[in-house]
Amino acid sequence: MNHGAPHAVILFDGVCNLCSGFVQFVIPRDPSGRFRFASLQSPAASRVMMEAGALPGEADSIVLVDGQRAFIRSAAALRIARGLRFPWPLLYGLVVVPRPIRDWVYDHIARNRFRWFGRRDHCMLPGPGIRDRFLD
Image (cartoon, rainbow, N blue to C red; front, side, top):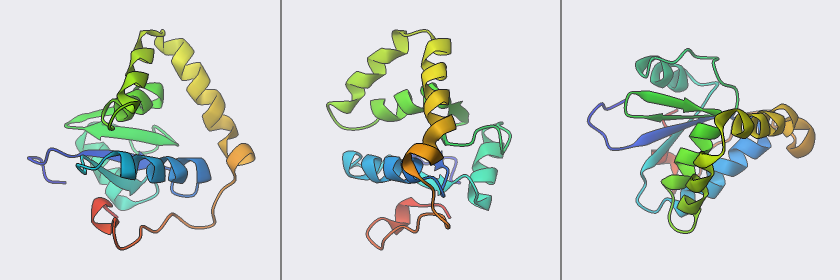
C-alpha cells in the first residue's frame, strides 16, 4: 500500500453476498475514488491490516483502514458512510448512539448475514471499469 496515498481501504468478506453488495453500493457513491477494496481472504487484506496494527482475522465482515488506523464493526460502517456523497454522510450522526448498542446491531446482522443474504462460492471479481480500485 502506498503510504502517501489519500485512499482508505475497505476490507470485506469476499464470499458474503451482503458484504459484496455493500461494496457495489459504495462504488457509485464514491465518485472521487477515495475508497479502495480488498477481500478479507486475500493476502493484500492481511498486509493492509498488519500495516495498520490490526490482526488479520480480527474482523470477519467489514474493516476500514484509513491511514494507519483500522476501524471495525459499526465504527467502520459509519466512517464509510461519512466518506460517501450526500445524503449518506448523514448516517454518521448515529455515532452518538453508544458504541455497545451500535456494535450489538452490527454483530446481529453480521452473525446472520449468510442465512439472510447467502454466500458465494468464490470472492467477488471486479469488472474492468472498477478493477483498479481493488488491491487483490
